[in-house]
Length: 441
Image 1 (cartoon, one colour):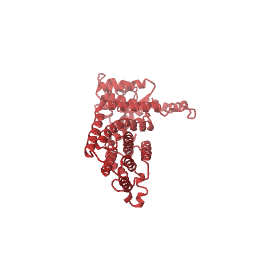
Image 2: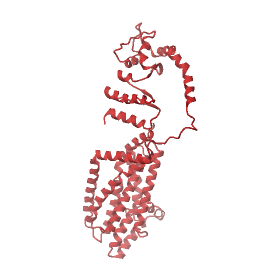
Image 3: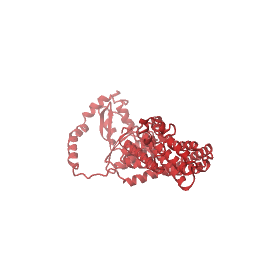
């Protein structure tokens, strides 16, 4: 979008709740004259709706300057004029200093030059700002303002509604369902405008599926150790595949801070959509990956076996995504998130039973470490799914499973535990987004 559209969009986000008073800091900064006029015309339209707009502005054009009702002009941090904007030039030209103003020029430039002491008085001298301050305080304009300001404040306070009788406002102008719908549509529009991201995802999983299938090609019944390695690296891929998105998540978080501060959306709405929009794509990516890996590696491909493999890896993927989003929710920047992510993942991987057999771990670690690792539960479920139904030698398979420490549970018991970890990371992400803020407004 253009610079003018961006400015108007920014203003629109800030006024989405239609406040009675709006502060703007140089809304025309960085815009050319025509775009600046369009932006200020939109601001003028807001002021015409009985709203107070207080704005600082830098070098406005004549057309933009004429839009202002009142002007506060300052020099050296103190006021030298406060009154109708159209009367500022006569105020200085009719003063004892007799400043000269050409009506064909921009009154805003004239005001800035007078405040900066760059305009000669009638006597040929330059008037410093502190002298203009003293002059303004001696004028009838200032005295009238001083006499009426207290009465105006008293009237405003008297007319202010009683807080006890004031109607309770809705915290957000849109319902939670409406906010979620808007956020989902915005994310879908972003995906549609950049389809290369989705295409890259399919290409990535296609390449990885062919690579894994070639690396572990045609595993036989006796290659249980190779199957264990295949399952472990499939799970590792499902987790690590999301950490590169942490910087993008943090950048998106800054937009969330802005919109939440403007009252446009709630934490819950944003939190519910950051993962919801990715779930269908992850499901399709993994379906392609599993459809390539299963027949190429000759692992269990019957209906139940394939379904369990897909569900288990998919749940691990969502848990890994939730972990990455949790990290992105409480770190200050993307570099910190990428540096912290390996530390967050390592305990789950180390206690999975692949790098170090669970049965060989010290008792004080074995008691709590493996049960707390969702990777261990996923790996155990995949091994039980593959080895138990297809074993030829019951004794050999049971010895392997006993050596791994994978004999105490049914394979379907692993799925709820993996899901519980995903729920835990989702709740932790929500709390971080709600209470940890890295932007001062």
